[in-house]
Length: 129
Image 1 (spheres, rainbow, N blue to C red):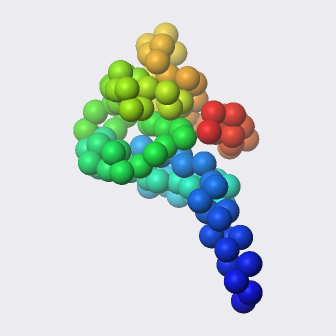
Image 2: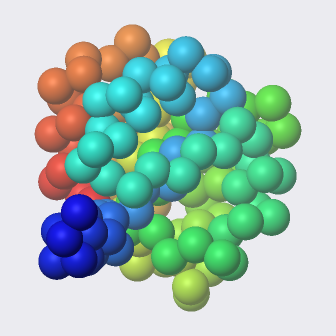
């Protein structure tokens, strides 16, 4: 394989927008990975504690957060991210099947109801990442 081809592929990976997904359901993580894995650099976490232990190592372009998580809520995490000077500028998309739209924090850039339409999710991630 010629060097220039390898360099191009490596460079593409570095140019991909990084989306950090906090979602506890493995099937939803898998769907997101299958649909968006070739277009975005996806990082998955099943819990807030897993995400929190890794956040300083990651420069995200977008956070995609489920609301109902085993160790907290996406609403709480969203509020924390928007109050932190290191992450306040990063867009947050919140998704949930069990939330009243009126309870969505004003800090979230977008809310997506579950079950979500794949096309709507792709469009939203492309818009905010």
